[in-house]
Length: 294
Image (cartoon, rainbow, N blue to C red; front, side, top):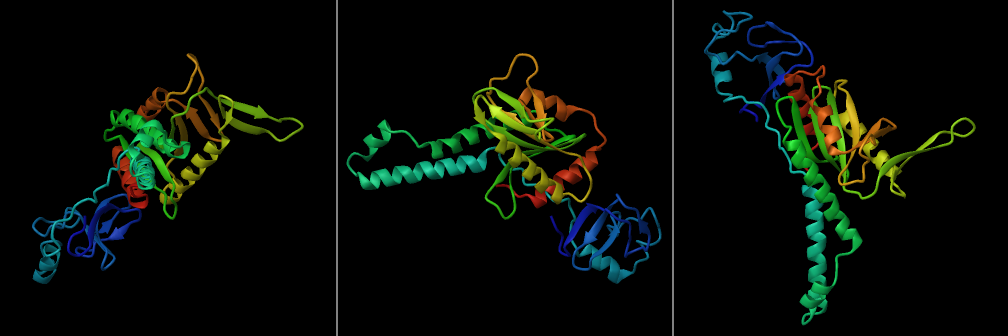
């Protein structure tokens, strides 16, 4: 949220100088950034209390300076639009379903309702329903983990694309890019080649070759990495919902993308890591601004 002068409270990536008191503001310190003038000032300059770094400066700034800052209005942290897990896939399913229903009723005014009762949606339509269910179910599990050290961004749109990212989770040990898949069959890794031929890793679910899913997650990881200015760890995850996982073991990694199930993912998100709650909030806010809801 911005004040009247286009102000935003933010954590500075680089050191700056307060335009009110002239005091230096260290990098990684919260300050007020004024977009119109591209200047920063100490966050304590509400013009009624002195600045801790220079107690006399804020009060001696003069009537015009005090009025200018006071007129800026309240300054608050930018809000994050949370998004809804599976929402974009659910909308697309409903759109296709409605379009089909309207077409059949228009072509067959008398028996359209009967035809809809005895017929089924096409696979290209039901695939969207399946995708929505996978995102929704994983979203419910992730929501139970949400706290100040696990922040979530479900269903984010990739800029200049019709594609989306099912889930992003920012935790103490890094950011997770999670693609939820509601597939039947057992996910497993098949390795071909080696000594005499190039090594090739293929992701199979049952007998179905799903290697392209790994390519998709790697592209999503690149999108998230390009949205972050710092070097926070980013992990790609394929989370299979309702797959035929074995009782012992089963999860694996291919090309740095983990393939697992929800209960295997949750402990990783809860693990300790180098990122503080403040750093997690900063990354979460940065990604929310770069990747809007789908």
